[in-house]
Length: 342
Image (cartoon, rainbow, N blue to C red):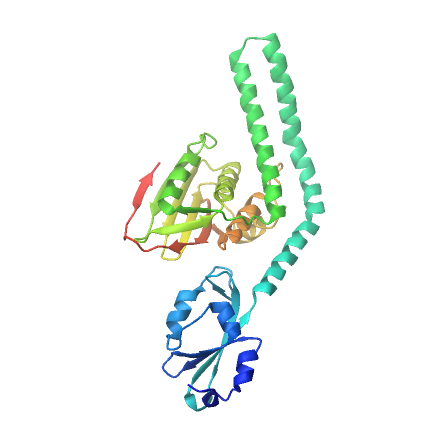
């Protein structure tokens, strides 16, 4: 297709600051300007536009009106019909820099709020630290004055629990301040299930009755994640349920061709719709010793994985917590994995 058929001057087409792709009436790429090449790479004339889009476009949970490319760029796509129904002009606008600027602004806003955050957490951090210090002093005295092994074990257990609480609160604070996004791990769903079993059997959750089941689709999936922060999010959900009075928790890992869903359901008192909304607000808490960061940090971690986090009232009782994460699908050999473990 010639430039004259499109009504575009060749020099304007070449120097235009937006990406331009001319698609003929058959849906085949006819011309592509340098900006479009810089965004999408070289595309052979005669290539079907739909095939090109399917190969290069990558849907993400938080794209909105933007489109993510497999090379990490973010663009806006619009179309304009050519004169005499000769095809379409595809217009590509690079939004990568503006999106990075938006991330920088959001990060700066989080940093600006750190003063308030630290002040709100100061007395919460002081309480378990003071208790741990006191118990350490008692333990030292007890070891010197008595041979009572039961008392020693009780104090050691109390000390370890308080220090664990303190460590988790500090970790949540740092994660919230940093934005939570460092995705350096790649794992299969089967390996994720194995790692989850190890995590649940670590001893931290021995006072909870936890069941875990999988409902994976037939595809071989991979998850790009930060394993430590992902399990930190799951730990926050389990701890939140335990502090709310739940003693039984069900975890379901399920997948589609595009997403992994992690559903955590407990038998606690649950929340209504308004409470579910408030619980995701930083510093909101109904607990005397709560920081109000546990569930907001879960949402932060999910969003850092280009996913989402939702709280839902359970139809029967308790609370439903749903983490949804995007998957990379490598279709090698179809496989089905369905299992249930306690």
